[in-house]
Amino acid sequence: MAPAALPSSAVSLRDAVALSGRFPLLAGVDLEVAVGETVLVEGPNGAGKTSLLRVCAGLVPLASGHLSILGLDLSHHRVDVRRRLGMLSHSSHLYDDLTVRENVRFAVRAAGGDVARIEPALARWGLVGRLAKTQAGRLSAGQRRRVALAVLTARWPELWLLDEPHAGLDASARALLDEAVTEAAASGVTVLIASHEPGPVESLAGRAVTVTGGRVTAERTLAGHVVPAAPSAPAAPVAPSTPAAAPPAPSAPAPGGPGAGRHVPAGADRPAATGPVAHVA
Amino acid sequence: MWRDAVLVAGKDLRIETRSRVALSQVAPFGIVALVLFAFALGPDRQVMAKGAPGLFWVAVLFCTVLAIQRSVSVESADGARDGLRLSGIDPAGLYLGKAFAVAVQLVVLEFLLAVGVILLYGAHVEVPWMIVVSCVLGTIGLAATGTLYGALSAGLRVRETLLPFLLLPIAAPVLLAGTKIWQAALAGGTPGDGTQWLRLLVVFDAVYLAIGVALFGPIQETA
Image (cartoon, rainbow over the protein chains, first blue to last red):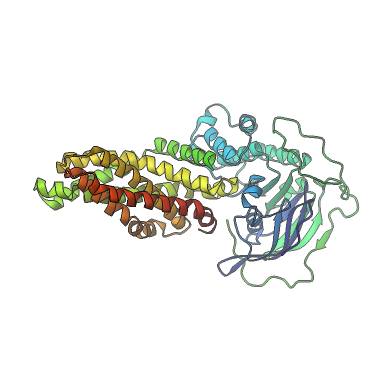
């Protein structure tokens, strides 16, 4: 039996292998993400970034290796873990026949969230007035994305899994998203951001890991949000309308300080992945 | 579990009231099936009245397949099924909620089909309570099995053709029992003629509801 993850670890993957049929999605990933850390997962298309997030959400099972999320073994505490994480994926998970407000309300209630946070979240993403009463089937792709983000911020889970978060969003929505991620990180939320275009989201993360061929092949420190000094229990959710607590004191190298921006190859002792790597969208 | 069941049932019924697929597409399909059965049997009212119980339940089975396919497709669009899984909703509650929503739609469809059978086939109801009880129990059984097998086929690209193949043989006991009860109720037989078949429906419902509550979660994760 795999040893229990440290309480300070939000995501712990050890030699994680995931398959889609015979195709490897992950080919032995080792990744530790501390509670409160914001990590950018970068890599080219088909590298396994989305699969990594889906594995963390329990949507793709591990074929071998160990995974714990927020200190819990996902295979035994799937419902508990999922109620504590939120995922922004390529799909918006909306019902076309329900209105924007009904979709958000259903998603928040299904996750056991606080319905009092729904209206502030809708307002945050500009989903007010007639738009809130519009059926999701009539929304543009960007508007659907905003609804998905409203669900995420209304729930305010402890772990955010963001897959290409800027995709489909206009400039104002991207700014709102960056603001929400910064606020979440400051309140102790752990954030994993997968992006094949790291530039726009680099400023949000304190660390970047490069995924290639279903493996973490490199790691570097960034100038964004860094790990709190002594993370203990996950921070209590903060309502979007409430100003977040002051950002915790950084313990990792300060932006521009020693280590900033340096490349650290990870898994150098392992041969590079061979064979095709399927990509789950 | 019950909170989640109510939540999911409310969501599915709200979607149905907006889209009106059951009333605008499934119900007309069922009525058309009854009319075609009448054409096939010919103008003899006695033959039609005699065949009415079986034809009613065959039409209900066909409508069940369509209602279940609709219930599955609602969760297939825009990754909604992943959204439900990610929400951490109780799988048993999800199963019961979806089954209940399907059952409500089937009750409405059965009412319309029953009226169609009486008008088209000239059937006379002698024991109304048996008709009502058989419809309630049959509906529970069809919704329980349909929701379970709908989830089983949900992740497959061939689900539209696989679902009827899986569901119709499994639902055969409902067809058989429902037909026997209706025969007793329409022919003016004694209630005892149908009660043994009512008991079969009760057992069928209990078994499939228990299986669904226990297995819907694992099926959702693997389908």
